[in-house]
Length: 232
Image 1 (cartoon, rainbow, N blue to C red):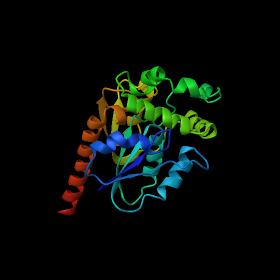
Image 2: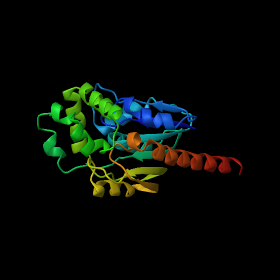
Image 3: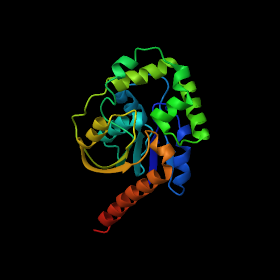
Image 4: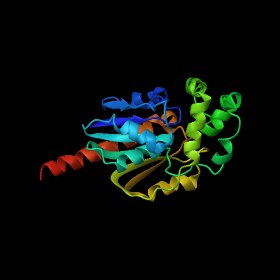
Protein backbone atom coordinates (compact mmCIF):
# COMPACT_ATOMS: atom_id res chain seq x y z
CA UNK A 1 0.00 0.00 0.00
CA UNK A 2 1.42 3.38 -0.98
CA UNK A 3 1.34 6.68 0.87
CA UNK A 4 0.35 9.81 -1.07
CA UNK A 5 1.45 13.11 0.47
CA UNK A 6 -0.17 16.50 -0.08
CA UNK A 7 2.02 19.40 1.15
CA UNK A 8 1.08 22.42 3.22
CA UNK A 9 0.71 26.04 2.14
CA UNK A 10 4.08 26.08 0.35
CA UNK A 11 2.67 23.51 -2.08
CA UNK A 12 5.98 21.77 -2.80
CA UNK A 13 7.57 18.50 -1.74
CA UNK A 14 10.75 20.03 -0.30
CA UNK A 15 9.76 20.13 3.38
CA UNK A 16 8.83 16.44 3.46
CA UNK A 17 12.47 15.28 3.53
CA UNK A 18 12.68 14.60 7.32
CA UNK A 19 9.53 12.45 7.13
CA UNK A 20 10.64 10.63 3.98
CA UNK A 21 13.90 9.68 5.69
CA UNK A 22 11.88 8.00 8.47
CA UNK A 23 9.50 6.13 6.15
CA UNK A 24 12.03 4.03 4.31
CA UNK A 25 10.40 0.96 2.76
CA UNK A 26 6.96 2.52 2.22
CA UNK A 27 6.11 3.43 -1.40
CA UNK A 28 5.56 7.20 -1.33
CA UNK A 29 4.25 9.66 -3.87
CA UNK A 30 4.12 13.43 -3.33
CA UNK A 31 1.54 15.43 -5.28
CA UNK A 32 2.56 19.08 -5.33
CA UNK A 33 -0.18 21.69 -5.36
CA UNK A 34 -0.73 23.36 -8.75
CA UNK A 35 0.58 26.93 -8.79
CA UNK A 36 -1.79 27.95 -11.59
CA UNK A 37 -5.56 28.16 -11.57
CA UNK A 38 -8.04 28.43 -8.67
CA UNK A 39 -6.60 27.81 -5.21
CA UNK A 40 -9.80 27.04 -3.31
CA UNK A 41 -9.89 23.62 -1.70
CA UNK A 42 -12.66 22.24 -3.94
CA UNK A 43 -10.77 23.12 -7.13
CA UNK A 44 -7.47 21.78 -5.82
CA UNK A 45 -9.17 18.54 -4.75
CA UNK A 46 -10.67 18.09 -8.20
CA UNK A 47 -7.27 18.64 -9.87
CA UNK A 48 -5.33 16.31 -7.56
CA UNK A 49 -8.01 13.61 -7.64
CA UNK A 50 -7.21 12.99 -11.29
CA UNK A 51 -3.58 12.14 -10.41
CA UNK A 52 -4.25 9.45 -7.80
CA UNK A 53 -4.58 6.24 -9.81
CA UNK A 54 -6.41 3.14 -8.61
CA UNK A 55 -3.74 1.21 -6.69
CA UNK A 56 -4.47 1.07 -2.92
CA UNK A 57 -3.18 4.11 -1.04
CA UNK A 58 -3.42 6.19 2.11
CA UNK A 59 -3.75 9.95 1.62
CA UNK A 60 -1.95 12.38 3.94
CA UNK A 61 -2.86 16.06 3.93
CA UNK A 62 -0.48 18.38 5.76
CA UNK A 63 -1.89 21.58 7.28
CA UNK A 64 -3.47 23.53 4.36
CA UNK A 65 -4.00 20.27 2.45
CA UNK A 66 -5.98 18.51 5.16
CA UNK A 67 -9.16 20.06 3.78
CA UNK A 68 -8.11 18.95 0.29
CA UNK A 69 -7.61 15.36 1.50
CA UNK A 70 -11.02 15.45 3.16
CA UNK A 71 -12.71 16.60 -0.06
CA UNK A 72 -10.91 13.98 -2.13
CA UNK A 73 -11.96 11.28 0.34
CA UNK A 74 -15.61 12.32 0.00
CA UNK A 75 -15.31 11.63 -3.73
CA UNK A 76 -14.42 8.00 -2.88
CA UNK A 77 -11.43 7.31 -5.15
CA UNK A 78 -11.33 3.55 -5.77
CA UNK A 79 -7.88 3.03 -4.24
CA UNK A 80 -8.27 5.13 -1.11
CA UNK A 81 -8.10 3.14 2.13
CA UNK A 82 -7.58 5.82 4.78
CA UNK A 83 -6.78 9.48 5.42
CA UNK A 84 -4.13 11.12 7.60
CA UNK A 85 -4.53 14.71 8.79
CA UNK A 86 -1.16 16.16 9.86
CA UNK A 87 -1.31 19.44 11.84
CA UNK A 88 -4.49 20.07 9.93
CA UNK A 89 -8.01 21.46 10.18
CA UNK A 90 -11.26 21.47 8.23
CA UNK A 91 -12.47 24.97 9.07
CA UNK A 92 -10.78 28.37 9.23
CA UNK A 93 -7.69 27.84 11.42
CA UNK A 94 -7.58 31.34 12.91
CA UNK A 95 -10.12 34.13 13.46
CA UNK A 96 -7.45 36.62 12.28
CA UNK A 97 -7.22 35.26 8.74
CA UNK A 98 -9.88 37.55 7.19
CA UNK A 99 -7.76 40.50 8.35
CA UNK A 100 -4.33 39.05 7.62
CA UNK A 101 -5.12 38.20 4.00
CA UNK A 102 -5.64 41.90 3.18
CA UNK A 103 -2.48 43.21 4.87
CA UNK A 104 0.84 43.73 3.03
CA UNK A 105 2.82 40.51 3.02
CA UNK A 106 5.73 41.06 5.45
CA UNK A 107 8.38 39.03 3.64
CA UNK A 108 11.23 40.14 5.90
CA UNK A 109 9.26 39.45 9.08
CA UNK A 110 8.03 36.09 7.83
CA UNK A 111 11.60 34.87 7.28
CA UNK A 112 13.05 36.00 10.61
CA UNK A 113 14.39 33.01 12.53
CA UNK A 114 12.84 34.17 15.80
CA UNK A 115 9.36 34.48 14.27
CA UNK A 116 9.61 31.12 12.52
CA UNK A 117 10.67 29.43 15.75
CA UNK A 118 7.78 30.95 17.69
CA UNK A 119 5.03 30.23 15.17
CA UNK A 120 6.24 27.33 13.05
CA UNK A 121 9.09 25.08 14.08
CA UNK A 122 9.80 25.59 17.80
CA UNK A 123 12.85 26.95 19.57
CA UNK A 124 14.92 23.78 19.08
CA UNK A 125 14.62 23.75 15.29
CA UNK A 126 17.83 23.10 13.38
CA UNK A 127 19.47 25.76 11.27
CA UNK A 128 18.98 23.49 8.24
CA UNK A 129 15.21 23.35 8.74
CA UNK A 130 15.03 27.11 9.27
CA UNK A 131 16.91 27.76 6.04
CA UNK A 132 14.67 25.35 4.12
CA UNK A 133 11.55 27.03 5.47
CA UNK A 134 12.86 30.50 4.65
CA UNK A 135 13.62 29.38 1.10
CA UNK A 136 10.11 27.95 0.67
CA UNK A 137 8.54 31.20 1.88
CA UNK A 138 10.64 33.25 -0.53
CA UNK A 139 9.66 31.04 -3.47
CA UNK A 140 5.89 31.50 -3.08
CA UNK A 141 4.70 34.35 -5.34
CA UNK A 142 2.67 37.00 -3.50
CA UNK A 143 -0.42 36.41 -5.65
CA UNK A 144 -0.34 32.67 -5.00
CA UNK A 145 0.16 33.18 -1.27
CA UNK A 146 -2.77 35.58 -1.11
CA UNK A 147 -4.98 33.16 -3.02
CA UNK A 148 -4.22 30.35 -0.59
CA UNK A 149 -4.69 32.61 2.44
CA UNK A 150 -8.08 33.58 1.02
CA UNK A 151 -8.96 29.90 0.68
CA UNK A 152 -8.10 29.41 4.35
CA UNK A 153 -10.16 32.43 5.38
CA UNK A 154 -13.17 31.04 3.53
CA UNK A 155 -13.02 27.53 5.05
CA UNK A 156 -16.21 26.56 6.84
CA UNK A 157 -17.01 23.59 9.03
CA UNK A 158 -17.85 20.60 6.79
CA UNK A 159 -21.32 19.09 6.73
CA UNK A 160 -20.59 15.64 5.27
CA UNK A 161 -19.22 12.75 7.33
CA UNK A 162 -16.07 10.89 6.40
CA UNK A 163 -16.64 7.17 6.82
CA UNK A 164 -13.08 6.01 6.03
CA UNK A 165 -10.55 5.29 8.78
CA UNK A 166 -8.59 8.44 9.59
CA UNK A 167 -5.59 9.46 11.68
CA UNK A 168 -5.02 12.92 13.17
CA UNK A 169 -1.40 13.86 13.98
CA UNK A 170 -2.14 16.70 16.38
CA UNK A 171 0.72 19.01 17.49
CA UNK A 172 0.11 20.27 21.02
CA UNK A 173 2.18 23.47 20.74
CA UNK A 174 0.59 24.67 17.51
CA UNK A 175 0.69 28.49 17.25
CA UNK A 176 -0.94 28.66 13.80
CA UNK A 177 -4.05 26.53 14.30
CA UNK A 178 -6.21 27.16 17.35
CA UNK A 179 -6.70 24.24 19.72
CA UNK A 180 -10.47 24.57 19.34
CA UNK A 181 -10.35 24.32 15.55
CA UNK A 182 -7.98 21.35 15.65
CA UNK A 183 -10.21 19.52 18.12
CA UNK A 184 -13.21 20.01 15.83
CA UNK A 185 -11.60 17.83 13.17
CA UNK A 186 -13.08 14.83 14.98
CA UNK A 187 -16.64 16.00 14.33
CA UNK A 188 -17.10 14.93 10.69
CA UNK A 189 -14.95 11.78 10.99
CA UNK A 190 -16.73 8.54 11.86
CA UNK A 191 -13.53 6.55 12.54
CA UNK A 192 -10.74 8.82 13.74
CA UNK A 193 -7.63 8.09 15.78
CA UNK A 194 -6.10 11.20 17.33
CA UNK A 195 -2.41 11.12 18.25
CA UNK A 196 -1.35 14.10 20.35
CA UNK A 197 2.29 14.94 19.70
CA UNK A 198 4.41 17.38 21.66
CA UNK A 199 5.67 19.87 19.12
CA UNK A 200 4.93 22.91 16.92
CA UNK A 201 2.81 23.23 13.78
CA UNK A 202 5.54 21.80 11.54
CA UNK A 203 5.25 18.46 13.29
CA UNK A 204 6.25 16.33 10.28
CA UNK A 205 9.57 18.17 10.16
CA UNK A 206 10.38 18.54 13.87
CA UNK A 207 8.97 15.21 15.13
CA UNK A 208 9.42 13.14 11.99
CA UNK A 209 10.25 9.89 13.80
CA UNK A 210 7.20 10.09 16.07
CA UNK A 211 4.94 10.90 13.12
CA UNK A 212 6.44 8.11 11.00
CA UNK A 213 5.81 5.60 13.80
CA UNK A 214 2.14 6.61 13.97
CA UNK A 215 1.80 6.51 10.18
CA UNK A 216 3.36 3.03 9.95
CA UNK A 217 1.03 1.76 12.65
CA UNK A 218 -2.05 3.21 10.97
CA UNK A 219 -1.12 1.76 7.57
CA UNK A 220 -0.35 -1.63 9.12
CA UNK A 221 -3.82 -1.70 10.72
CA UNK A 222 -5.42 -0.95 7.35
CA UNK A 223 -3.41 -3.68 5.63
CA UNK A 224 -4.24 -6.20 8.36
CA UNK A 225 -7.91 -5.34 7.97
CA UNK A 226 -7.77 -5.86 4.21
CA UNK A 227 -6.03 -9.22 4.62
CA UNK A 228 -8.61 -10.36 7.15
CA UNK A 229 -11.42 -9.45 4.77
CA UNK A 230 -9.66 -11.27 1.92
CA UNK A 231 -9.49 -14.47 3.97
CA UNK A 232 -13.22 -14.59 4.61
